[in-house]
Image (tube, rainbow, N blue to C red; front, side):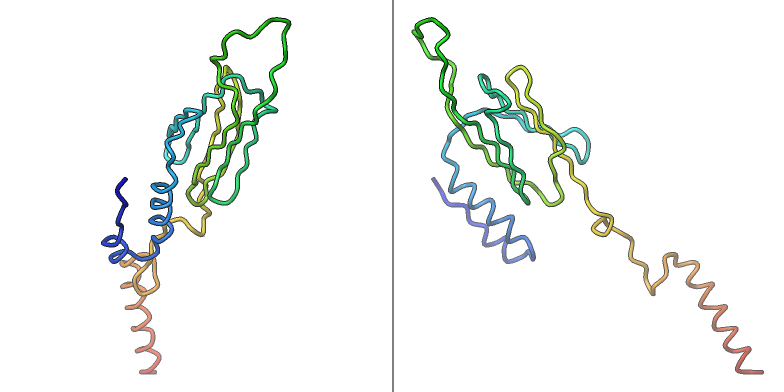
Length: 164
């Protein structure tokens, strides 16, 4: 496998070290284990859903842990109960798993559900008001036309006060 080289991008960007480190670590640790299979969908600008195919798992067999910028989904293997018959073929995977998803800043788990063998995890990105983009005014005012009017009236008032 070829190594990813982000050096040209690291030279011309500031503050993206975490992103490049994440991409490099994902390339190193990608072991090819695709169990359980999953989908990630986006519905709306700030809403996401992860769907994992977890046939044979019950809600008590699944552990979902959300940490800062990391979502870990674990399925614990349980012992098969003998239902009175002899098991001839095992075709349904009953093995433990762990899936890790790196989350962007301000993404949180909204809810999770298990139905029809599919585990769905809804995520939402909530950027705090202080972090949202805002317009920066030139010369400390919000509207340039008001600045010109305000500055002119202030200057005329100063001149009138000085003349008196």
